[in-house]
Image (cartoon, rainbow, N blue to C red; front, side):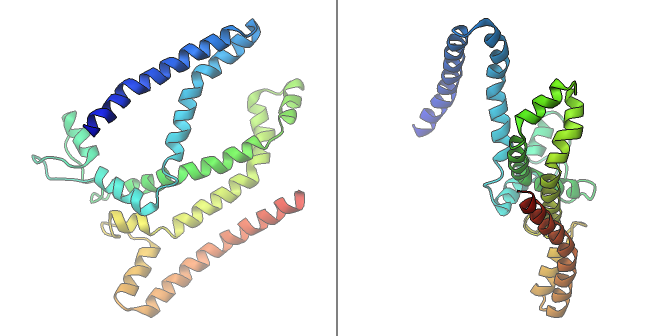
Length: 244
C-alpha cells in the first residue's frame, strides 16, 4: 500500500505541481508591462531546468566517498555474458543488444571509471565555491564594461577570469591534494587491483602486512607531494586577506 501511495504521488503530484507553476507563473507575467514580460519569460521557463541541474550537480556532495563508491560499485557490477546483469550500466547495454563490460577489471576502463566517480563526487563542491565567488563580482563593473563596448567574451576574459583566478587556484590545488591522497574510492571499488594502485593504497597495504617502515616512507612521499600545494593555498589566502 505504501508503494502505491508513493507511486501515485510521483505520477500525479509532480505533474500537478509543474502545471500549477506554469499557470500561476503565466498569470503573474501577464500582469507585468510588455517590456518586462519579454525579459522575464525566458528566465521563468529556464528556472526549473537550472534548478534541476544545480541539484543534480550538488547532490553527491553530502554523500560520503565510501557511500558514493558503493553506489557506483553496483552501477559498474559485471556478470559473465548470458547471465542476468545486476549492474545498471551492463543491464542498460544488454537492453540495447550490447555485451557486458568488466568496467572495474578491464585496464582500459577501470581507471577512467575511478576518475569519473571522483569527479562526480567533487564537482558539486567546486560549483558551490566558484559560484559564490562569481556572485561576489560587482555588477557595476560588468555594466561599466558593457557600456564601454566590451562584448561578453572580452568581459569573461579580462574581468571575470582575473577576479575568479584566486578562487580557481585554491579550488584547483585543493582538488590536486584530494587526488594525491585518494584512498576510499579506489579501495572500495578495486582495492588497488587491476593496475589501479595509488599512493594511499600502497601505504595501507604496507601497514596491513606490518611493514611499518615502508608505510612510513610512503607517507613521507605523500606528505612531500602535498606540502607545496598547501603552501600555494596558504599564500593565496594571505593575499586575499591583504586585499580586503
